[in-house]
Image (cartoon, rainbow, N blue to C red; front, side):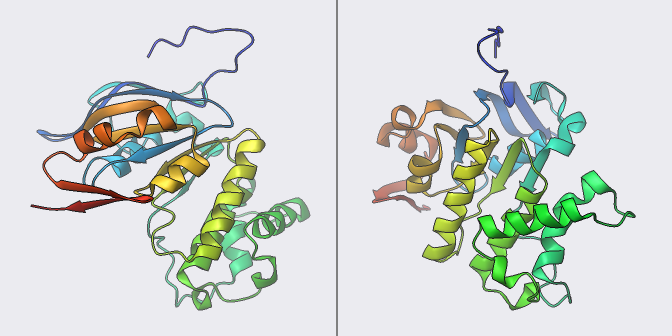
Length: 259
């Protein structure tokens, strides 16, 4: 995408320029094009297997591009990783592993302090504030595995917040969480945006897109729309994105019946 500079406008946190990704002969994504400004969020919406997780991995620099260019905070993805935080769909932490909530959140500081160095008071304070932001400051000494699924997701977001990212990537963060955890996650995302961080969130939840995101990217291997939420998240575009399946827009969610 053409990103002509204006001294009055900050450069984009994320710039996708005709991005394509392939796994061997199979094309996973083709010609994805769009920008996310600092302090704004974009929702990635599309069916399972549409390439949403692949796009997040490409933004992290974990998969090579077959075409196009990704610029993260003015740099190639691999060079920007220190300023990017990622919350995956299912974390690799074993819930049976004897680690406290506070220790999990402190992991978010490791890129700054180094894996072999002792955390400083400033790092511990950053972890404490992050837990406070997701409403779990009183659980810092609890074992991570004893928390509910929604609480664990909030802890993982706190770990990302503790890293002080300028770009936050969330892959289906609201799957299976309770209403309290959902609101805590939304509030934390809003605070990150107020502090100038950009957010990319993969979701099937249309209400989340409206509540948390200024932009929407509709994906199904290729792009079916990228723009302001209200203008892009329309029944016509959603049906095109979910083509080949029966689609029902029930309230705040996309419900797809596979044929």
